[in-house]
Image (cartoon, rainbow over all chains, first blue to last red; front, side, top):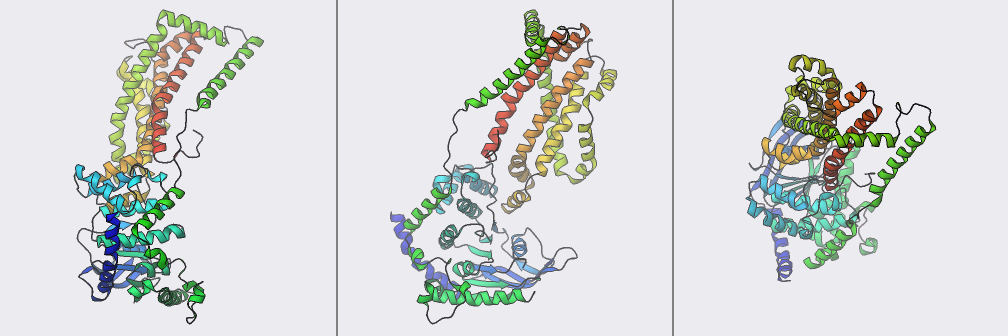
Length: 267
Length: 313
């Protein structure tokens, strides 16, 4: 009981800190300079992407399908290399969460989290306790022994979130992680993610094609154009947008209009 | 509902924040959130129901066997053929009893089983590293892949004459033929198991920071396990068949007396009772190994990964 009380008291404070971060900004965690990417001799997927993400910031990367969002995340994570431009990322790489949970089916929920800890070099004794803590953080302490196929889609994504937190990297990349979930679960996971972000202070780059989701979660929304993908607009999401439904709706409307404008250019 | 709340802003329909979490939900305490989530979890996940022992699993195969034996007896009792050419189930049972009493049956079963297990074990030890190497090293796969697949097509009996010339009538001949049957099959099973690993698993492994060795140990091997076990199962079938073929063809010398030898002896004596007994015992041993060794392992593996739902197993 005391735990939840203190948590509730802490929340408004972190909210204020977060709003401040958005404007003043900490040290940059990810810097992209004129990043471009083409596969073979094909057309450019990304061209001149410029963006800076500060430490502890939550950035929503918005774009229509085929705008190279996933390619950009792969480049930031080091799974792929850009064909032009330069980027600055933390030397230890980034944690990654995918659209499907990508849990290993031969391991239990706890085992999946523990594997991430093991590959990071955490000792055997500490692993079990730490994995349990992380699962508790996503309210899944009771499901540690369940195999992935015994969990619902939302629970699997929460295990995946716990696993990516187990990597203990400053930057967390998320590639449409809630796209395949039902609306009720997605709403819940938005809260969950926001809480986890506030409690862990991660830098999050969240790719989505859902404008409401971007406004709901991001401190800043970057709009990526399609073919080639490049950052064409950005919006700050202030604390007011979170508390005032009218303001949030108005911002959502503006971003949607701009997104549609981008899509129409390809008609 | 938001229309009345926002009378002065004209918004397109899509802008209504209906899936943006409502301020009410956001204001909930952590405890409320936790219980809401727990409720969803229990609604969305299936309750695990333990399956109790299923009698039909045992009764149905026995019933099927009974029907076949009865049909056999019925056909024999019609008397189309001479009884010594087509013996009935009871005749076969009788000659099996005689073989058993003489100790010939036990000796043959024991000799063949021993050879089968030793040969199969050596095949696993040889084939596993080769399979891993071929599945991981690109140019080796390119170079030797077709050859290994080809060896699987070649009936291992084809090696019997060569083996007799090289090794004479000794146990080495029998083992050699078994290896040529089982090893390519196990290698192929392992390779196809590795080939069928979803690429996403390797990406996750890389994201989690796995080294090459860790990737093989924690991602590739467990992911390829169902395919590998399938390969082992087939490898066992191949070694058992090759063994029988080799024992039928190669007799005498320093060779021990196996089930294949018993079968061949039955043919030479023109004793259909012995021939049928040997065939049934060979079949019985094969089924027993499948039921006692491979079926439980495979089932456990598949159930653990949630791959059994909806199957007829």
